[in-house]
Structure formats: C-alpha cells, structure tokens
Length: 125
Image (tube, rainbow, N blue to C red; front, side, top):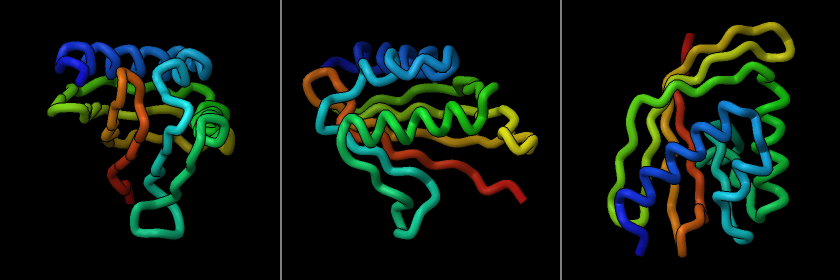
C-alpha cells in the first residue's frame, strides 16, 4: 500500500497536470484498467467511464470544453489507498459561460496508480 505522503504527492501532481492542461501527464497517474465517475449522468453515480482510453477521452473533453480551466487546491486528505482532493474549479466554457464551483475528487489507488476517480461538485444556481 502506498504511503499517505506518496498519495498526497500524487494528488498534488494531478492538480498541477490538470492546471497545465497536460492530458498525457494526467494519464500517467492512472492504471490501464482505471475508471472515472463524472458528477452528471443517467445513474445515481453520474456517468461511469471505464478503461484508460475512455477515461483519457472524457478528461480531455473537460479540458477542451473549458479551455482556461483552473483548479485551486483546497486540501488533500488520505486514508489508506484513498486520496481526496478538494478544489475550486474556475474557467469559461467554449459557449462563454463562466464557471466557479467547489468540488472534490475521490481517488482510489492500486500499486501507485489511480484505478478510480470519482468526481463531485456543488450545483450552483
């Protein structure tokens, strides 16, 4: 099992990679059999995407849909093989909508790589 420090470092690295809009660096933190659960979708857990290529495509669409996306890190929490990254997402969609929303990602790690990213964010009305 990775140490709490190594998972916290991975969470920091993921945040930096997202802020650099570097999809290949983002994916270097993920296992081949990874999965992603997005906040919106047809099921109570949102939309679930499985497999490295599908997760990469889904995450890349987020970067493309909000070209100036930025995550301000608001803290990391680690328990065993689970890391939680709390953040404030800001940016402007390609349709011109300004976004500012708090959220968090629950990551599950195996052998030092993320096997699940489960994303949550506040609904701003």
